[in-house]
Amino acid sequence: QVDAGGNRALPQIGDFIKKEIGNYFERFGEVATIKYIDPSYTVRSVAANGADSLYCMQLAQNAVHGAMAGITGFSTGLVGNCAVYLPIPQLVSTSPRSMSPYGRTWERILAMTGQPNTAPPQKKDMEIEEDFAPLPEPFSID
Image (cartoon, rainbow, N blue to C red):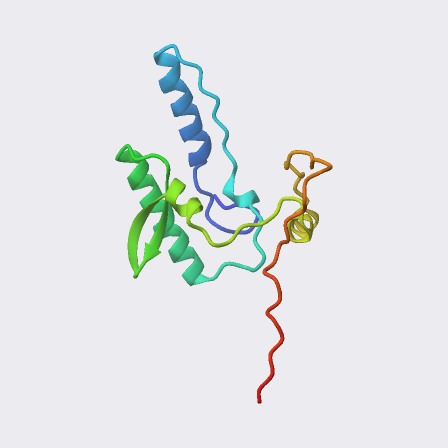
């Protein structure tokens, strides 16, 4: 079988995993809310090439290996061409980049992607953080 794009149709693994996880929790009398976002609906600015496909496959395989090993709260990545697990708290706490949810850059992203704005309402006395680094001081070459 092939899909609309002419590619070989693959089984719907996401729906299968979602159902199996739900069944697992049901057996123990627990309620689990499971959200599955089909990756084919994610936004991408350019078409994927072979290197993108390989990199995504490596990230996905490493994420599954980590999850199956019982590790939580991590992201996968390549550091020095080696697959690593990156703890999410350290990953975001040491990031030098941040963006104001009330700034122009975020508004542009929302407009381009059509996403809803989930930032809490801005307080009237709250100063808007700039989205960009301040311009350097002018200098002259003597």
